[in-house]
Every structure is written in C-alpha cells, then in structure tokens.
Image (cartoon, rainbow, N blue to C red; front, top):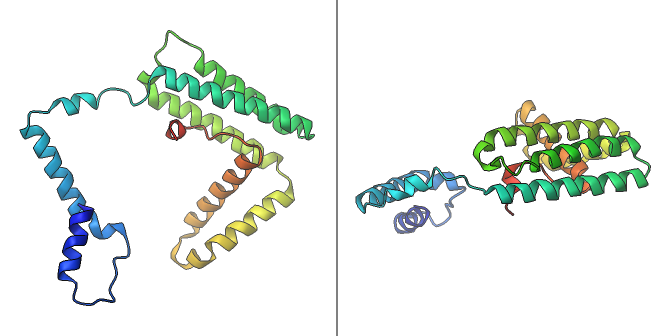
Length: 193
C-alpha cells in the first residue's frame, strides 16, 4: 500500500517542491492492500491463518524467562541501590522482584492463557515502582528531568495540549529513573526485543 501510494504520487506529481509529510498520506492505500490480502487469503482457502490468530503470541516458557530475568534485574538494582545508600529505593525494589518471581513460579499454570491479567499485574508493579522512585528521587534529579523535558518539547509546545505535555513529562521522568537504576520495563510489549 505504501509502495503504491508513492508510485502514484511520483506519476501525478505536478509540483516538484511538494513533499509527503507523513505516513498518514498512505493510510487509504494501506487499508486497501490489507483488505485485498484478506480477500486473497479467503479465496485461496487459507482460512487457517485465522485459526493461527487464536494461538498465544508467547509461550509460557518465554514469559517465565522474561519474568525471571526481570526479577533478577530488580534484585541486582536493589543491591546496587543499597550499596549507594539508597535504602528506601532498595526496600521498594526487593518486593517487586519477589512479586515477579512469584508470577514466574507456577509451572502448572499456563501464563500464556491470561496475558491480559499478567499485563495488568506487570503494569501495577511498574506503577508502584515508578511512584516509589519518584518519591525517593532527590529534588535535583526531579528538577533536572523537568528541565530536559521542557527543552525537548519546546519546539512542539504550541501544538500540544497541557495534558499531553504533562503525560510526556511523566513518561520522560519514568524513563530517566528506570535507566538510572538500570530497571527493566515491566510489560509484555518488551518481552521480545
């Protein structure tokens, strides 16, 4: 669909200085190409593609490995935080690591069957960690993060709503704090690099 759009654009281009400014320009052709592919699959009798859609995207083993690795990373970060004198942060990281280990434990349960429930649990743990890290962060760290956010979004401030600016600020601060303590993101979206 994208390829068709650009071919059509090149053929009908009257003004050499006009440019395509985004992928939104290709939306209609991409949707048309997707519909054509769907129809072709049905006509070819390859309806088995839809039954493949019911299979979980991750195996229980992949999920357990991801949770175990994340728990180890949180445990290591807790040790480092304690060595640096950040006892409060270490005290918040240790229970989160234990919760991840607990989620990874039940071998009889197929974690891949309730991905939504698992994602909700991971989101809750990550939100607790974020709140703890923000609470325990120094005033200087928070001020520097806010300054960087303000500098980064300055060119776009006029086109963004206050809600978007605030959400971006929270996301940036979270990213900085997670990187500072070398914490993994806790979501199935990060399971496969």
